[in-house]
Amino acid sequence: MALRAKKHKQNFSMAEQADKHQLYEESVQCSEAEIDFVESTFRKIRKRKPQFLREDFCGTAAVCCEWVKRNKKYHAIGVDLDKKVLAWGEKHNLSRLSPRQAKRVELIRGDVLEVNSPPQDIVSAMNFSYWLFKKRPELLRYFRRVHKQLAADGVFFLDAYGGHDAFKELDEERELDGFNYVWEQARYNPVNGDLSCYIHFDFPDESRFERAFEYHWRLWTLPEIQEILYEAGFARVTVYWQGWDKDGEGDGNFKPVTQADADAGWICYISAEK
Image (tube, rainbow, N blue to C red; front, side, top):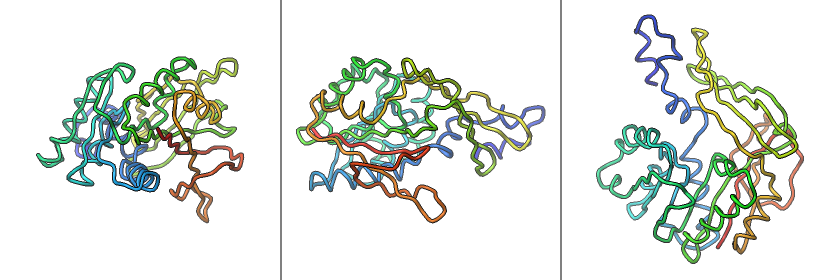
């Protein structure tokens, strides 16, 4: 981790030296597991290999880069409004690809409600990014836009989280190699579903990267999401639930379900077929 290489600098805390995007990729995002799921699930649904993937709200484009590494015929488009995070992704992720792989990635700075792309086999909107659309007409507009951008047999992949803890104001901490990840649900408004969350990073020198990331979302429920996807024109929507290992932790295996336990906290995948 680059953080350790800078520890010799004097008068700077570990938090001040930290790279928040690198910390995010280490603590939150597992692009390999994400691509494992969307690739294998698409093949099960459509009985063919996908080639074209668009990652909406792509951030550092880690998923796009993982996609093109899987197959020499795979192409990826990443869309994000943030110029700085796209530049970080080019410097730290695209630069690690071979020249041939990098040619198959296109990053677009733009609004997912406005960007046009060739018909895609897969459109992906993960890490609850689409929750920034707080009003039903806004989310419906986005889902309709995705539907239009997909190939005739394309599939839209999303994720969601919930459980009764999702409606609480709380802090959750997880210890990782060289730092602690802190997820804060700072405020929830039950009247309109508004949810404000922050990610902090704590370090061994007792410094904190306060509010490295902040999110102001609507906490959408699964029935709402599924209903809006159908209204947007998708033919079939499936929810995939994670199993549990012997220690009570998520086992990483997501299977289609029509009912699930009312756990305190859960994360699921969703596929919406055109």
